[in-house]
Image (tube, rainbow, N blue to C red):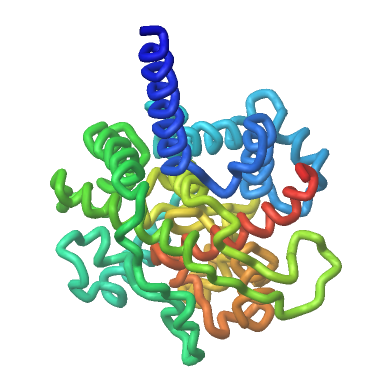
Length: 353
């Protein structure tokens, strides 16, 4: 009898261990070799660098992250935990009123790009059709490897899609959320069905997963003494859950969202665009040539320009192959974000080894 009970106990332990292993495998990420405290600190510092700038030292980034009242890093960490399944839900949100520098001229600029240049009936969901152009959109140079075939079959797809869909449905059904306010601002005469929201959620998750599992590597093309720009960028350094968390923080999943940076002369000197809000100098926009309120004549030195120059072949202060249009696309926004995130990851990970 005792022997039988022992066998049962051992069997139950085996089953439990097996289940635990399966769960861990499904929710595993690239940060799984770190302790929980290390992982959380690394994510917070990467997020702070993404938001405040990556040239700060490790200690300065930690100081910024720990500043009372600064919650960008805490938000990203919580969203990351949501996507990996460490927490069941998150109630963090923001309203359009916090994006105090939005501008109708920029909205019309983006609408013109997406509706007159990107729209090609690629999807019956207009929010996909308008923003799913490949990158680079204006290049004569071959960068086919930067448009990897979308991956739609992988182990944690259902879980990630469900988590994104539930938040997006919540946002769309609440008239005061950032996503809904942006949506109504852009498309007051359009609507999304539950099926549309599900398909859009699938698209974002699939593209994010595709790029983080694409094995895309980019070599630095020019010398710099800055430790922020590593010799090689590897997109698969970054877990899909982190870029989804960045998207959630920056745009609440609305692909046309932006933030305009305005100087004391009321000129828009820089903008952050798209799902991941990559910063670009406003002088790159073609409307800057005819609108004195956009651009200040001092072009360059923003994330778009520097990333394009060091890793993607653009000449300095020039849209040689990649343009501001590429930041409007879902693919381009995610690509630039991942390059920036890997720059920060490689700079910071050595402090945890």
